[in-house]
Length: 208
Image 1 (tube, rainbow, N blue to C red):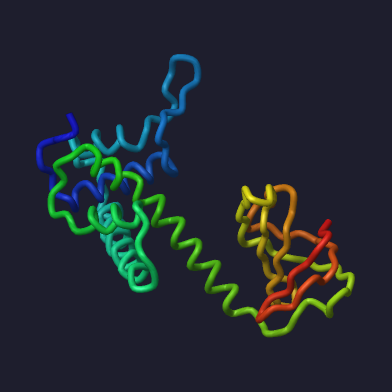
Image 2: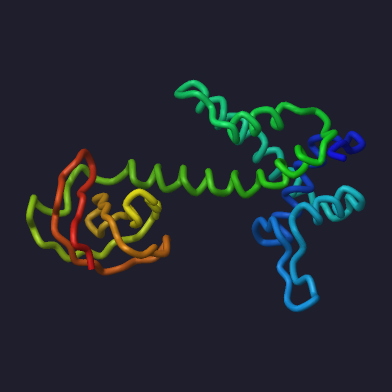
């Protein structure tokens, strides 16, 4: 059965933040070595925290309020720009609930702290890229060598490649395709050819 006794929604959001803190992230399946569970699922921890609210700290409760407000605002802003997808509609709905009465909604809220963390990181990256200088990394056809801080990796199934964005040492934005995922938040020395100049960014080709 999907139904459950009604639980205050704020408490569920707080328990979700407790689980995210204790697991150091989000686990949909338990981490197991042999027959021993090393890390339980976040949903299992949420259930434990609801049964023993002493597990929930004041910091968890504050984080839950910030998470819930941010996710609600995010989907509202998204709705002003475009039609909401299924996950965004579900997010909007659970953000408005005063009480949780289904295991499905509990599971959705359990995943919210991870979505919140991803959004904060994306917004931080977007803000940093927006502050880049107008200058480019070179002229069309130039072969350049740059020290670049990698900020974002997006995989394209269509092209079977990774599209990487970063900031070069002269505070200009660069992006390029690469056959492998490059770890974000690392600084690399790269070589490539300037393929295209766009507003506030330089596209590189044949990157090594």
